[in-house]
Amino acid sequence: MKITSKHIVGIAAIALCITSIIKKDYIHEKIVNEAYKIGINLVSDNTESNISELLQSCSFIAHAGGEINGAKYTNSKEAVLNSISKGYKLIELDLRTSSDNIIVAAHDWESFINNTEINERPDHEQFKKQKYLSQFTTIDISDINEIFNNNNYLALVTDKIRDIQLLSENVSYKDRVIVEAFDIYGYNQAIRYGFNNVAFNIDIDKSEDIDFIISNNIKAVTYRGDHLESDSQSMGNAQKLASHGVYSLIYSYEDLDIDKIRGPLGISNSLIYVDFIEDGTCH
Image (cartoon, rainbow, N blue to C red):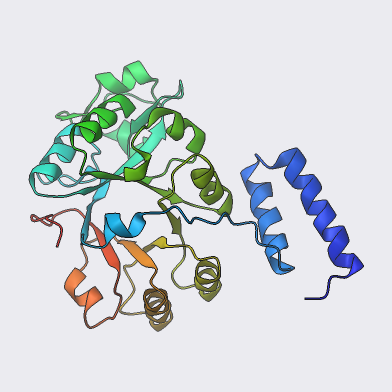
């Protein structure tokens, strides 16, 4: 590519922005996108990833800790321990921060408030006192660490959390954490703080997302897969990712058929977030 004066001015502007305001997510995303348009790659090279070792033999991810007593999305201690007993090795948790900035597990604050005895985003002490649906034990980062440190074959799949630095400061088993990144800034931050197993959240129906993932050698993605079979664009994009060896972590409102997805639909290297599959044994 021929570098023109216009490109040089653009590069200088990008460098200035990066120096002064890189910590602002929305501005950083704009910087990276503009740089990408003129051929500058600002996506971190993730050569240290061992994500294939974590994902290649497993089919299922226990969604939000997994189902417990017919309830889903509880992110509770009982749910996690139940999933472990069923053979799950990949446990996804929705990580948020309490009002005093402690990492806790909750799908979203609205549903947490509706299913506990509080009426606003709690501080850590309030959070720990709650029983979700009046029966399930809430867990914070200390509880999560205890579970994963005592079961060194488990891998934690994160959702929701954007403060990667805070996560880094609280987790020692980074080689067994798969961080879901929601933008390029988050992806780069995860790698910067030692989380080399990063899955980039995309819209599977957008071809530009697929091209970006492939061209930047991103090894794993997450996306909603409810309409894979009914939408040819989404299906073709998913198959294209598979053909390039990208791992797809697919979530949905209802449990999907992994055998069909990997078989007739041709989406190899895929794993499914599930709620009600009894056998979570990796195979």
